[in-house]
Length: 225
Figure: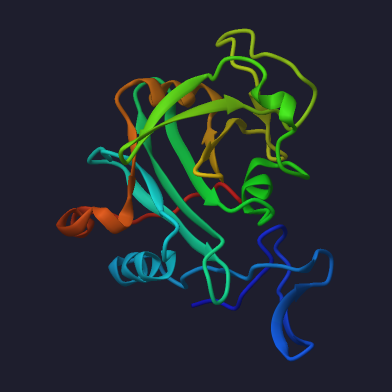
């Protein structure tokens, strides 16, 4: 397991004593939930993700196609879990290489906004209009709204609000919703691949997959988060 970092930025965190209670602190963001990532992505890392998730689901798009793989895993929090992250990557005929990050977090943790390229959690006005998609997360229907990290512009081709260019020039779509008082973020690259969410994908909790876990492959992604 790599050393803990801040969920809001890449900075390493320190452990300090605050009135007899050890807390993790970031030089920029103060007290934070430490972010933990496995050194390698393999079956052992997947089992570790399941064990550390606690009562917070580690959600992944499902089913994964034969050429799709898990490319990112992380949890934030100590001793309890405040956020989980699962990233998957694959290819589609229309979009080519596709990356999807799913962040499930308690409000105020900051991992979702970091992955989305935002400085803060979404404004209440994000949820004024109709949701872009509705997904099934385990046994729940979850509405997801597009959120922009820049000027409020629509993608002219797809009519998808929230389609933005990353710093490296790759476009992405960011969606956010709420499940039992917790944020659910999806970051999809390229932006056009968000249409996959309308083609039968749903979200499964890794902790409920059982024997199907051994069928999951692992890979790498060039997309930073």
